[in-house]
Length: 314
Ligand code: SF4
Image (cartoon, rainbow, N blue to C red; front, side):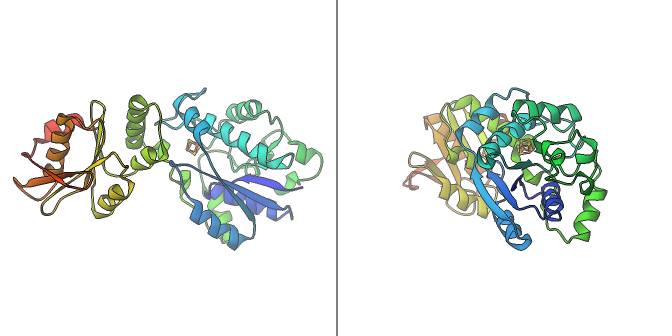
């Protein structure tokens, strides 16, 4: 029987795979990508090095819809961890078609989504009662059907609980396992990112991948139905130019300064503010700001005070 492992690239999912490989169980790791977490490169490399098959699956519109309206609410930011796990398990169920379903969840590790009753709730909602194998905490959890049938040897699994990572780190050292840092860098758990995403949900009905990708870069400002993004360094300036949509305006000063992107209705006020912000974050003083689809127009503005600038910040 093949084990389909929910694989983030983080330490716990890496250990879950290793524990089953030790029992000679064939592994297919399933890595989900979205504009909020992207560890595809790392996952491809480790799958090759550690000898397991890998499926990469992009989470699309239904996942975004779930984030906007999660049944079980958010964690500390805009991270709907319980619903997210249920969503991913439902996806993996379609791929596994009766195979062993495995996660790296550790009982009690995350207060919002991994308490014992949360793990039971996830099973119930995903209609996978006793069918989710959690090798790191297996000995503390009810027996799964795979253990009952003798497909997986429960004795060779672990009984870890809580937030400490000592046992996992020792295990990784022993087997020389590569892994990503805890949480794998999910942007939904980041407070600053949460503000930007909430603003986007509030102001845009149809959200594209481009809108979501833009949230990763620059300082974000809002003036009614206009969004202004100011690059924080050269890399972000380039990224904003790259991610510019057909209707967007870009702004640059004559001299050293950021690239600014204006998306939305592009009203007179919005154009003025975008130019002011561009100048305010530049090293220049009283220079012309070029703007437009291809910087074909120009406008003269003054720098604005920090308090005013902050009042538009998302
Ligand atoms: S941290 Fe992000 S990826 Fe992980 S369960 Fe929560 S929402 Fe999902």
